[in-house]
Image (tube, rainbow, N blue to C red; front, side):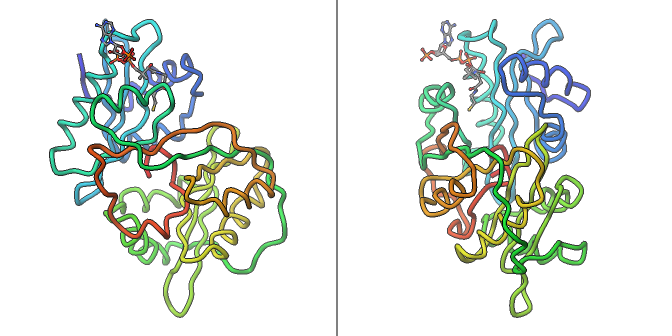
Length: 273
Ligand SMILES: CC(C)(COP(=O)(O)OP(=O)(O)OC[C@H]1O[C@@H](n2cnc3c(N)ncnc32)[C@H](O)[C@@H]1OP(=O)(O)O)[C@@H](O)C(=O)NCCC(=O)NCCS
């Protein structure tokens, strides 16, 4: 049976994620419960499948955390969850996701089309000096950050953006000529500092944001980049991050993602775009 999960189901979600080697990403799941709708496939009161749907007005939906417990695989649970989420999204929505190789066949069967290759880069950041281009965001910056985010993303992510100051370890902005022209965040996922989002109008601003976000990070740093960002992928590799896994950005029925994506260099996380 598919039902909407609540925060009380978090432990079941984490157990299943761990059983599939995804890690107990509690901080991330809590945000997803907050901003998204978590669908669960429940059998005998146990969560055996999950899929998170996060909607941004007007009509953009990011799907994530598609997981089915190993002992329940190949019974159509993944397909049922995905069909349910597509119905929930509605016919007019642009629905997209990042697909692991394991998920790709299922997504293709339900009408998702590959848009871009994407690679996860992980490693210890070779910190330089602070760039001086960015500064720490303050509560007063939030309205301007949200406006930039909406213009670039092409839908209203205010419910997400307003949570970033408490969710993130660092949130940095670039002001120029009286407006915010870039911003970026870094958040802790278990033991790894995840860099995202990164929104900027130039390659140099993007590097400045990433340097200032990753520089103070202890231990491992991760950023996920699509392959149309060849120069940036090269640059993060030189700073110490290795490509470790590949996914596909897929869009349902091959629709076009809105906004000005040229300025969206890295997602908040794959789950949220
Ligand atoms: C990817 C994943 C979600 C698929 O879940 P699932 O419940 O096994 O998916 P389904 O059962 O709906 O479909 C998978 C396969 O089972 C087949 N199947 C569905 N119902 C079936 C049934 N009653 N009997 C036999 N096979 C069946 C499907 O045709 C499909 O076959 P194919 O892969 O050979 O083409 C699951 O394997 C998983 O959690 N993987 C690890 C995490 C992951 O990578 N998730 C994707 C993130 S993007």
